[in-house]
Image 1 (cartoon, one colour):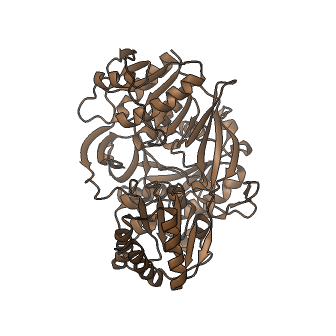
Image 2 (cartoon, one colour):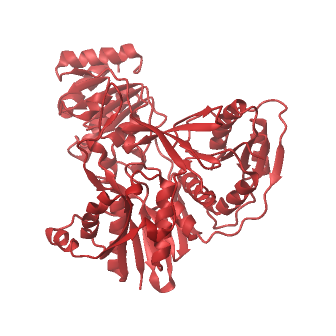
Image 3 (cartoon, chains in turn brown, green):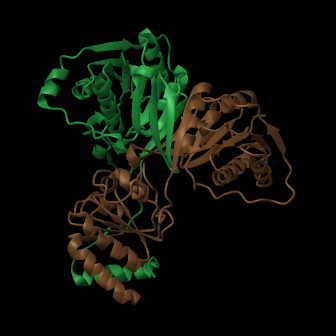
Length: 319
Length: 257
């Protein structure tokens, strides 16, 4: 069967990887794109969006985590012998990918942020971040299949095309996992999604107390943005929910404008905001590393600067 | 009695890495080393479980001979002994190698009830070694664990996994492996007495020849270059005129409206 295989936790992420997979397939002289799906209905959609074949996993019994599919995925991959296997880098996807790679004794590029194909060698050349985002590592996989986990939203989702045909294969039953789900507590919907905000105002350790975050809120209000924070503000001080911290292991934001207030600029944090279009930083310490990651740096106490900034913005924006 | 293995990695402190702006090469001359941040939580959790339920904790690391200096630090955090799986070729291992080496070493050492790893390492952050190790050992695992409750009498654990879409609580029979998140605990800061005591704790060395394999990499690094960012790096003062200049610039950029 060979080709390029895809597994993702959600429909949206599967479509993103189909988009990446079909582009690679074109360079591999029309190799097949084979996608896993959890229902027949999704299988039809994936075919219309570019998959040549869809492997439909049987429904999981109640109390089974998604990771229960691992043995079935391993078996299918052993049988199909793909050239490339792409998995969405969600938390569950990362575990599934690591276990599949270990079982097949192949290499896995985790959190692959860019990939291209060496057509001669039929080899994927993959990039990922290293040292908390300080460096970019370029890797190739010497095992088979060549595997990568790819963060959601790295590629545009594939769109449906008229009249596409493909094959749908139903996979056999899944053995129950020894990991039993005994409870699920869905997360309360976030009031604001900082990954979608056009302006992100980020609060760092420069804030002296929780109440002072009102300054960040006010600045966000004036600029039509949302408030995020650094990891210590969420995890050590617990001033803001953990959903709001920006960094390599937190949220990755790419707003038009990122404003860092009292943010030192640790590399792990910068990795979470490096794709922002314009960066403004306010920090007392003129040597703070955030200034190297900023377009506009204001050296000063945020308690002095932010009210002035708000005032000036209100005038400029007529608010 | 509960036997817990805490895995940790001795890594370059990324804060010490400098980047040559022209060549993008990493300047590693004056780098320090540390126990990978997330692994401190793994060691701490192992020791807390042992304090609650009894049994033993062994801290395990894989690395080149130079990683030996990590052992005292790890042992000062509470485990009563360590395994040092070492070979000169064990520098710059890729995750599948680390998992394979750990799996072989753990198999040769025999019994355990629980293995605890960090969510990822602070250098590679590939988040592979924990689940890959579980797969190689043929034991169940739970990743991204934020809270764990052991029931040694029943040989099982309950773990809360913190995932993007909420908390999933799972129950697993031991032996099992978990990877833990940083907010599962606050690692203790070793006292002077603990640091001095760590030097007396037993360290067992495991050589590559004891494991009878070559552990070839499956992922090969072509290059490592400093991450660059094109930023203007303009600096302003807190004076009103400067702040107005910044606001004007932002308006011109079209990022506020």
